[in-house]
Length: 131
Image (cartoon, rainbow, N blue to C red):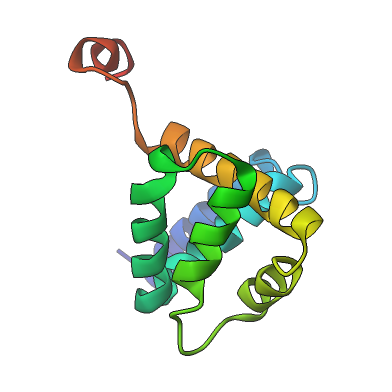
Protein backbone atom coordinates (compact mmCIF):
# COMPACT_ATOMS: atom_id res chain seq x y z
CA UNK A 1 0.00 0.00 0.00
CA UNK A 2 1.41 3.38 -0.94
CA UNK A 3 1.49 6.43 1.28
CA UNK A 4 -1.21 8.04 -0.87
CA UNK A 5 -3.44 4.97 -0.50
CA UNK A 6 -2.81 4.94 3.24
CA UNK A 7 -3.66 8.65 3.54
CA UNK A 8 -6.79 8.15 1.48
CA UNK A 9 -7.87 5.20 3.64
CA UNK A 10 -7.22 7.21 6.81
CA UNK A 11 -9.26 10.17 5.51
CA UNK A 12 -12.13 7.87 4.53
CA UNK A 13 -12.04 6.11 7.91
CA UNK A 14 -12.08 9.47 9.68
CA UNK A 15 -14.99 10.68 7.51
CA UNK A 16 -17.04 7.55 8.28
CA UNK A 17 -16.25 7.80 12.01
CA UNK A 18 -17.28 11.46 12.07
CA UNK A 19 -20.50 10.61 10.24
CA UNK A 20 -21.30 7.82 12.69
CA UNK A 21 -20.58 10.02 15.72
CA UNK A 22 -22.85 12.74 14.33
CA UNK A 23 -25.66 10.21 13.92
CA UNK A 24 -25.75 9.44 17.64
CA UNK A 25 -27.93 11.70 19.79
CA UNK A 26 -25.94 14.28 21.72
CA UNK A 27 -25.85 14.28 25.50
CA UNK A 28 -27.42 17.74 25.37
CA UNK A 29 -30.52 16.20 23.78
CA UNK A 30 -30.56 13.36 26.32
CA UNK A 31 -29.42 14.81 29.67
CA UNK A 32 -30.66 11.79 31.66
CA UNK A 33 -28.60 9.45 29.49
CA UNK A 34 -25.56 11.69 30.03
CA UNK A 35 -26.22 11.73 33.79
CA UNK A 36 -26.62 7.96 33.84
CA UNK A 37 -23.38 7.54 31.93
CA UNK A 38 -21.54 9.85 34.34
CA UNK A 39 -22.96 8.03 37.37
CA UNK A 40 -21.86 4.68 35.98
CA UNK A 41 -18.35 6.07 35.33
CA UNK A 42 -18.17 7.39 38.90
CA UNK A 43 -19.39 4.15 40.46
CA UNK A 44 -17.15 1.92 38.39
CA UNK A 45 -14.02 4.00 39.00
CA UNK A 46 -14.22 3.79 42.82
CA UNK A 47 -14.06 0.24 44.21
CA UNK A 48 -15.33 1.20 47.68
CA UNK A 49 -18.25 3.16 46.23
CA UNK A 50 -19.08 0.28 43.92
CA UNK A 51 -19.08 -2.17 46.86
CA UNK A 52 -21.31 0.14 48.93
CA UNK A 53 -23.79 0.50 46.06
CA UNK A 54 -23.91 -3.27 45.49
CA UNK A 55 -24.60 -3.81 49.19
CA UNK A 56 -27.34 -1.18 48.99
CA UNK A 57 -28.95 -2.84 45.95
CA UNK A 58 -29.02 -6.11 47.90
CA UNK A 59 -31.13 -4.59 50.71
CA UNK A 60 -33.49 -2.54 48.51
CA UNK A 61 -36.18 -5.26 48.35
CA UNK A 62 -36.39 -5.25 52.17
CA UNK A 63 -36.89 -1.46 52.39
CA UNK A 64 -40.47 -0.39 53.04
CA UNK A 65 -40.39 3.37 52.43
CA UNK A 66 -38.39 6.12 50.74
CA UNK A 67 -37.08 7.14 54.15
CA UNK A 68 -35.95 3.58 54.76
CA UNK A 69 -34.19 3.51 51.38
CA UNK A 70 -32.41 6.78 52.11
CA UNK A 71 -31.32 5.66 55.57
CA UNK A 72 -29.84 2.43 54.18
CA UNK A 73 -28.12 4.27 51.33
CA UNK A 74 -26.57 6.88 53.63
CA UNK A 75 -25.55 4.13 56.04
CA UNK A 76 -23.56 2.41 53.30
CA UNK A 77 -22.17 5.69 51.96
CA UNK A 78 -21.09 6.79 55.46
CA UNK A 79 -18.59 3.92 55.36
CA UNK A 80 -16.71 5.52 52.45
CA UNK A 81 -13.44 7.18 53.48
CA UNK A 82 -13.60 9.66 50.58
CA UNK A 83 -16.83 10.88 49.08
CA UNK A 84 -16.95 12.34 45.58
CA UNK A 85 -18.79 15.70 45.45
CA UNK A 86 -22.11 14.24 44.17
CA UNK A 87 -22.13 11.71 47.02
CA UNK A 88 -21.25 14.38 49.58
CA UNK A 89 -24.16 16.50 48.31
CA UNK A 90 -26.55 13.56 48.59
CA UNK A 91 -25.37 12.94 52.14
CA UNK A 92 -26.03 16.57 53.11
CA UNK A 93 -29.68 16.47 52.01
CA UNK A 94 -30.29 13.27 53.97
CA UNK A 95 -30.32 15.19 57.27
CA UNK A 96 -33.95 16.28 56.81
CA UNK A 97 -37.11 14.28 56.33
CA UNK A 98 -37.83 15.96 52.99
CA UNK A 99 -34.24 15.39 51.92
CA UNK A 100 -34.45 11.70 52.82
CA UNK A 101 -37.70 11.40 50.83
CA UNK A 102 -36.02 13.00 47.81
CA UNK A 103 -32.90 10.86 48.20
CA UNK A 104 -35.02 7.73 48.67
CA UNK A 105 -37.02 8.54 45.53
CA UNK A 106 -33.83 9.13 43.56
CA UNK A 107 -32.33 5.89 44.89
CA UNK A 108 -35.47 3.90 44.06
CA UNK A 109 -35.49 5.34 40.55
CA UNK A 110 -31.79 4.62 40.12
CA UNK A 111 -32.10 1.01 41.26
CA UNK A 112 -35.11 0.46 39.00
CA UNK A 113 -33.26 2.00 36.06
CA UNK A 114 -30.20 -0.14 36.74
CA UNK A 115 -32.37 -3.25 36.96
CA UNK A 116 -33.94 -2.48 33.58
CA UNK A 117 -30.51 -1.83 32.13
CA UNK A 118 -28.87 -5.05 33.33
CA UNK A 119 -31.68 -7.57 33.88
CA UNK A 120 -33.38 -8.85 30.75
CA UNK A 121 -36.18 -10.77 32.43
CA UNK A 122 -37.62 -11.88 35.75
CA UNK A 123 -37.54 -15.53 34.66
CA UNK A 124 -35.54 -17.47 32.08
CA UNK A 125 -38.68 -17.76 29.94
CA UNK A 126 -39.26 -13.99 29.95
CA UNK A 127 -35.59 -13.38 29.08
CA UNK A 128 -35.73 -15.61 26.01
CA UNK A 129 -37.74 -13.06 24.03
CA UNK A 130 -35.15 -10.37 24.68
CA UNK A 131 -32.18 -12.62 24.05
